[in-house]
Image 1 (tube, rainbow, N blue to C red):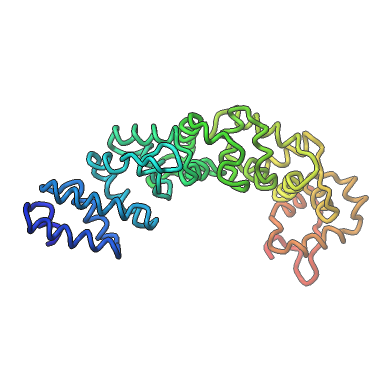
Image 2 (spheres, rainbow, N blue to C red):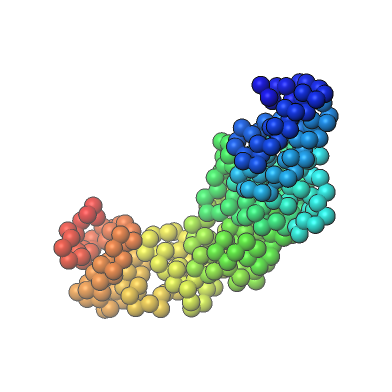
Amino acid sequence: MLEQIAVSGAGPSARLAARILCRRLRRPTAGHVAAVARLMTGARDKRVAAMAEEALALAWGSDQEVTNRVWDTLTATPGPAWRFLLAPAPDCPHEPRVRLVTAPPNGRRVLATALKSADPELRGTMADLLRVTDHPVILGDFEDALRIAPKPLREPMDGKLEARVVLDLALTNTHLCQPAPVGRRRTGLAVVAILKRRFDLLDSYDPASLVEELVRLDDKAFPAPTAEGYRRWLRALGPGPGRERLCELVTDGYPEALAAVADSGQEPDSPDLLPAFLFCTEQWERYDALDPDGTLLENYIIKEGDDVGMYLWTVAERNGRQLPAPRGLAADPGF
């Protein structure tokens, strides 16, 4: 009832109803935020709309959930929303200096809107913002969208097609081709560095995390130079945590890891991992010389426990080999 009076009325009664609704933003709920946002975009009385806009401006950025709710409501009714979201914010520490970037919504909302909004002006405006922004939340949305197995943003869409569209947009933002722009272990943006031939930037990521990302990456979701670039990088790994992680992923049967070590001759430094590595790469002469009675591989299986994947059993079955059974457990891949 209050919202109806505030939206459709004029004069003191409408302003009083609006004032009550705006005060409720001090303890915001989804309904309160949405109601005030609708006042801003649809009130008949311009003074009511101005009152609602002022209240939303104070609430924006006070709480992430409030920001998300304001965004969701305003982007459902484009038009007056632009004046609010793109209002100048000279003190904003990030580009572009507009209210949206002072405290952007999370959950890949801006990115999803740039890709999928039914309003072409909204799509274009958000795409333009994404091309220049350096805000870590929005950069993180790019990173998340480009990781291992790209998933559609908020609404059904082919993940591989969407990854290509996101990547095309990401390649235009210079802030995404920087040393680990959103954290050493957040490695989705390595794809951008590879396609821009900035292989030096890969050294800024945590090597084990990056190896895992690249080995598991769906190469069909990205242009061919992506796979060419990361395959060359994986084959040139030196000693260290990146190479150790690559060898661990070999024991999980990842094709990219198996191909990389086969082509480069890399192997682990860890004596505990070496028996399983030799077993999984089917280097039988070396394995039998190192572990003739299977004790080392048994110790590895016991140590790793549930982390031991099924690939050991796959290799054993393919080669007619008997895996050592951990003490107290049956030598059965189903145990």
